[in-house]
Amino acid sequence: MDAVIENFPVFLGGFWATIRLLVLSGAGAIVLGVIIAAMRISPVGAFRAFATVYTEILRNIPLTLVLFFCAFLLPYLEIKLDYFVLAVIGLTAYTSPFIAEAIRSGINGVSIGQAEAARAIGLDFAQTLRLVVMPQGIRMVIPPLLNVIIALTKNTSVAGGFFVVELIASSRQVINLRGDAVIAILLAVAVFYLVITVPLGQVAARLERKVAVFR
Amino acid sequence: MTSVLFDVPGPKARLRSRIISIVGTIAIAVGLVVLVMVLAAPRTTAAGAVIPGMFDPIRWDIILDGRMWNAIIFRGLAATLRMAAAAAVLAILIGILFSFGRTARSRWIRVPVAVLLEFFRGMPVLLLMFFTLLVFGTGQYWAGVAGLAVYNGAIIGEALRSGIQSLPRGQRESGLAIGLTPVQTRMMIEFPQAFRQMLPIIIAQLVVLLKDTSLAFIIGYQELINIGVRQLQNTYGNRYFFTLFFVVLVVYLTVNLLLSWLARIIARRTSGGYVSRWRRKETDPGLAVVRAPDAGMGGGMSGTGGGGPA
Image (tube, rainbow over all chains, first blue to last red; front, top):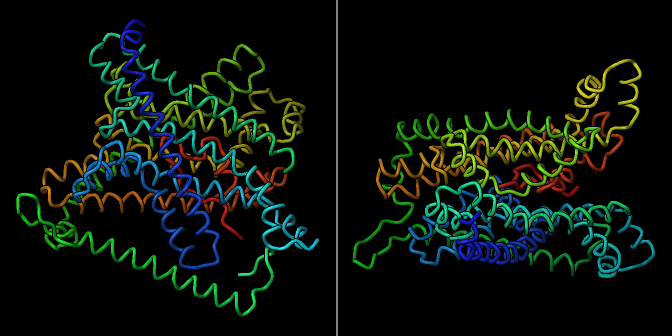
């Protein structure tokens, strides 16, 4: 336990890096994900095909390989960026298709009858979307979106294997100093992750229940 | 493409949409061509040496080298599959145990199991691997297997539990009524239905598990990435870095797309079954997978398709 208290600043540094990874790549992935989702449901065939291929490729390769690409291959291709920035790029790219799918699943969750009814009472395209489909769609989208963000929180740990000093990597530094206190150190790291994931999970579960009422 | 959202487009709207689609197609094509040209262009380093482009033949001749494929398939991929297979079997067993614990009558079992489950689900798989490696000193293979089995076991356990809970009460009651013990009822009546209902989620999770074996690369296990990109680069030389990466990428894509395709077929089969009639919404394969805890992302993410637009 004393090993954790002595090195608390190191953990805090790692925790802060994890939070920054999470927020930056989360925001990036949401922006990119919305674009991909829009392309995926757009009437333009080329957009649909591109979004489908992008989604299928990125979802079927491991995150480790994506970050390996960012950490080793991009510098090899003469793209010199800070490892932190490279990790954010990798996590953003990897997470975006999952965000896109979550959005798509939520929007598909709004039953077609709702749109039909809106059209039947004479609402135009914009009104149907703004007054009937979107309010329900957004509520449907938020729980799966939060699930993706929770998974992203855990995925930031992979960046620790590629020169980014986040929680996992900083715990390894502390373990090198205090090999006798491995269990305490790793449990402390676990608690840091739970501080992020458990509240997010609670919110997701509560919203899920709320959504379930009107489904 | 007609939609209930808007009227049938007139000539003006049709022209506009045609222009957008042509411009969009050209934009994407130009983007791809630029990317390929940038990669293909030779580079001059600061020291004045010229590095050949990424598609230069001298970088790609190992594609025809059988020894390279031997190492990729029989050492790299084999090590990855070995870890995935062991972890998958253990994860399903652990999942069954977890679902038993989570639905136990006694609060003294149910509550601690629920806490443990939440704990494991909230952990990065990598941390679980490190824990096993450093605390139990198991070696990289078993550290990887243990981390993957516990984490995915927790997720499969939750899936099985929700599958059991979604069964009508009568299923269990009739089992007990014909004289089966509660354990027999669970094994012979509830689990077979829960498994069937949750099969899409379980398979999606196994795809995640397979992808996550690559996390063991970070703790030093000699799997596909380690052997394919690290080791072979040492053997063949730095100029094959890009090629080897590409080969590993293609191997992962092939294996995972095959598994995802299988998952989709199974999902379609099971969703038409008698079980799903009670909860059709939940067993819609796309929605079920995306809405599952962790969205099939785990420490990596799922390859199964979300529900496509009709």
